[in-house]
Length: 76
Image (tube, rainbow, N blue to C red; front, top):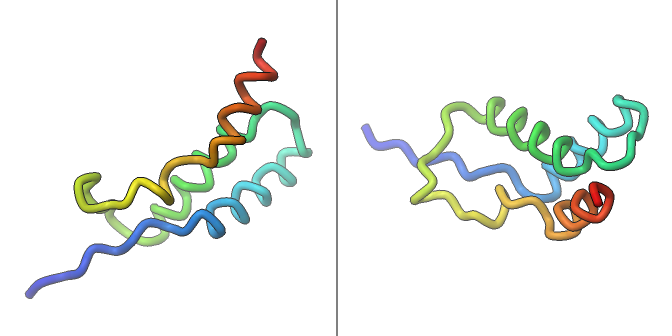
């Protein structure tokens, strides 16, 4: 029996979950990347086993550039 790999969550889904995490944490500054990664991890866990990185598109699993830039600017 062949199974089709489950695609990674969309950016929109990760963004919505990250925002919910941010709001639940009291809307702290400078934690965008952490919230993004936590949201991605939670959504991937809901979908089941992770698919291999060779077959997964990197688009949905890479945080938007502005999140990483915001964290770098605030840490200076």
